[in-house]
Image (cartoon, rainbow, N blue to C red; front, side, top):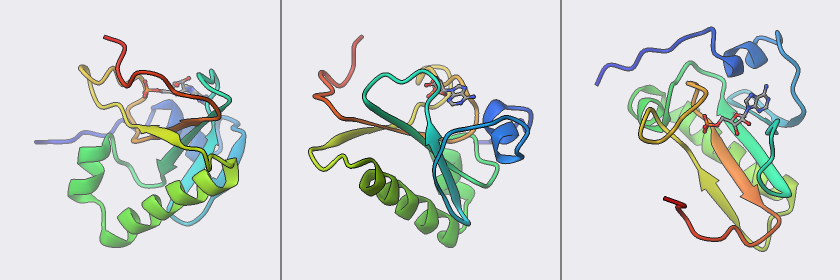
Length: 120
Ligand code: AMP
C-alpha cells in the first residue's frame, strides 16, 4: 500500500508549533496532548513526531527507534495520567476507521468504565 502524508493536517501544525496544544508529555519521538473534545475523564492523544498517516503506515515504514520510542511514550502517558485501573487505546485509520486527522495518533481513554468496545 502507498501511504501519502499531508503535512497540512492539524497535528502536523501542532508539531510545528503553529497551533497550541495542552501538552501532557513530549520527547524525541512523540508528543502527547489533551484531546480538544474529551470523551472520558482522561482523553490524551499520543502522536509520533515523524510523518506517518496511520498505525499500519508507521509500523511499515518507521525505524525501530521511532517505533520503540513511540510505544514507550504511550506507556509514559499511561503513567502520567494515572490510569492504573485500566484504559482503552484506540487508533482509527482511514475511512472505515473513521479517522478525522490523518497523522497517526493513539487515543488513551480512561478514568471511568469505557463500556462496549464498538458502538455500531
Ligand atoms: P480521529 O477520529 O481518531 O482522527 O480523532 C481525531 C481527534 O482529534 C478527535 O478526538 C478530536 O477531538 C481531536 N482533535 C482535533 N483537533 C484537535 C486539536 N487542535 N487539539 C486536540 N485535539 C484535537
